[in-house]
Image (cartoon, rainbow, N blue to C red):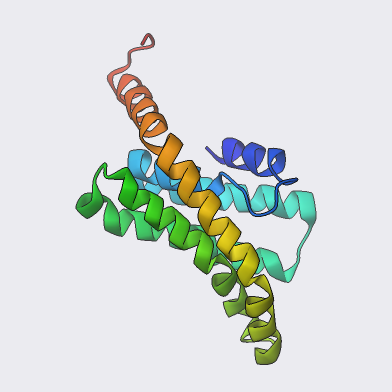
Length: 159
């Protein structure tokens, strides 16, 4: 899971605020539950190895586990309603900049506000992309992951 998160992040870096990490983190949490915490932690370490330490990395330490927590809290109530998961995914994209700027509140409040406001157009694009990806690909990929997990749990190797 961690490797897939990292690969899709790197593969789509050329697209501004279009990413599949949110999408896959939601799906992984729906299928594999709390095991996804380990996946996002290792993903964060991959990011640290590639880019080195920076204040952005501190934000990654709470942003991705927060998404896993949100999905864990909602998954029984929402179930397989992928319109709602699309809203959750889009909403996470919309608040992504605010979550990142939260760390900067401890460093420099004016910088945190400036960072957040300057990033709002990017967060809107992030929201739209996350919503669209989940709406189009969420249910089919969720079903495939769920089926693969069931085969794994029963010890079967063929579809």
